[in-house]
Length: 220
Image (cartoon, rainbow, N blue to C red):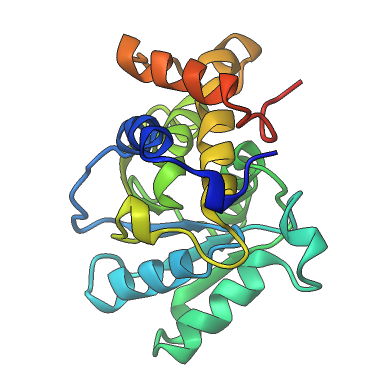
């Protein structure tokens, strides 16, 4: 097992290739709704609320129950905690919609579809907010389930070196990025995502990181 004090410059150089690949570099633009996907990273909630307060969409949806990581940390669903942050930042309660049953990215999208149908809402352009290293996988999952919608994906504007936090040290960030890249490669054939091209240099970086032991988030 690799700990943060064992992470070399060489490891960081290869990991940054994955970080850059997972980013889509979309520019937030006015949309019909902002869809924020839950996780342990509360900075994603702040980002969603900021975009609402900038006037980029009339409604703000938080999607997330308790996932593999957060069920060990919190009693309340991710979406409920995220919504409280938005309310504290000044987002009006009537602009917030909560989907708090989903446990993975596919359910985030499917259960949000159901929520919108129940509310009689039919947004066409979505501004999706997610963790930085999950932008591409969220895009690929959304587009599988909702191919006819316009989609812009964004995340908190944090640099790679600044992203780790106490609950998410650097070695865990790298583990997660490695696991997400594996899923981008394997999930399309399982019917979970649309395909995404992976450049050779990104896959070579992945293989080096796996060889160095960053394997704790790999799917079996």
